[in-house]
Length: 239
Image (cartoon, rainbow, N blue to C red):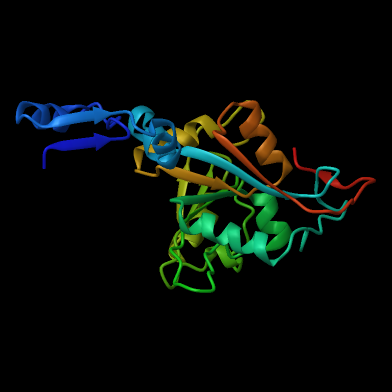
């Protein structure tokens, strides 16, 4: 080997440039920065996590042409089609954690698992924001069998007895600080997830969680799947 071409210098401050320096010291020609922007985008979650110790947060939502995610009654299945849902599962497969609010759990009772047609998908850690622990014990997210993991993030307002009931089922329950309105502090949640090694988070929550994350500037990327439909009226907006 006489020449090494590198797209992106390792952003990890513990090792950044060490390997390049060893190559150069050995007399090899080293070129750095070829397709750097593309490499940065390809590794955007790792770059964010390794430099800030905070997860890269992607907000994903399926919306209509008029920006609705559900009818006024909360019905949302299905705004988009099979291809969009398949892409959603691919996104789950590629992320460390999936984040929703308790409203989504109560309305849809989702599995929040990865279901791919051509391979066994990896299930992300399911993170439920539930400030007062309203999640039903029989909800699908409390099923932690078959490599399914669930973390419910709550506050000091949560009943201790109910917390223990969830833990008995194998669900992890963590109490975090709250905002003035009593809801889980989402900045504290991002710090906590980063500390436990979660580098990427896919948000599939409803309007309230999405709006709070955006307002607090905690979202790194927004993915909108836009369907050629109009709900109108009092339909629920994306934020």
